[in-house]
Amino acid sequence: MNVLESIIAGVREDEARRRKSPQEIAEMISRAPAVRDAISSLRTNSFSIIAEVKRSSPSKGAISAIQDPVALARTYEAAGARAISVLTEERRFHGSLGDFQSVRTAINLPMLRKDFMVSEYLIRESRAYGADIVLLIVAALDDRELKDLSDCAQGLGMQTLVEVHDEEEVERALKLDATMIGVNARNLKTLEVDLTAFDRLLPLIPDSVLKVAESGIATQQDSRRARSAGASAILVGEALVRSESPANAIRELTEFAN
Image (cartoon, rainbow, N blue to C red; front, side, top):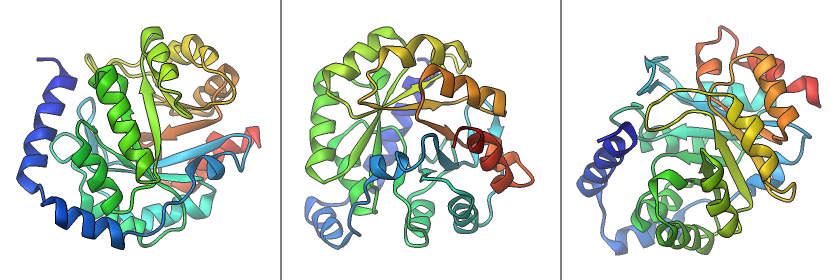
């Protein structure tokens, strides 16, 4: 079992443990805040950042305790982030739906639920907790699952960030008519990072699609590389939560292009 398969197995176990009835989820969705338009927000700037609340990862272990995720998200928002990502996977990333919900009520930006979406229940749960964007990892899903989960998300008004890691996955994402595609420089099976993925894959995606560069972006040089390859946005977590000044880090990573 590779790393991705192991994470997904845990996600399925945790989903089963906290699963609510269809009636409960439907009631929560009916009370959820209105969806915020992530693509419009990210296109406000010529180059935007999705700033992530991230405590831990399988590759790095503990990254930051983040005692107050709301305060951190407000810092991100004030510094110019155009969307906020909150990890909710519990076992490897030490995230929670509680973190997500508390941040969602405190900020005005679109929010990505950063987790491993492998069932329609998880998509519905995401909307119930106020998600505006959900992550669909091509490597974790077959084509039927991708379409079904994408249709479910769109039916609930949400947008999808479709994540790819190689040329074949880019083709699959484009067949899905994805409007937002993320190129992840981290191989989720080995956890190795290769920033040349941006150079190889971002140019394969039409400019009509919002292109996001994910993982391994720690310096302005990394950010410039992603921008030069065609990214309209970057998703950054570790570099921000490790920084003494997340606000300054956001400006360093984005202001050169705006």
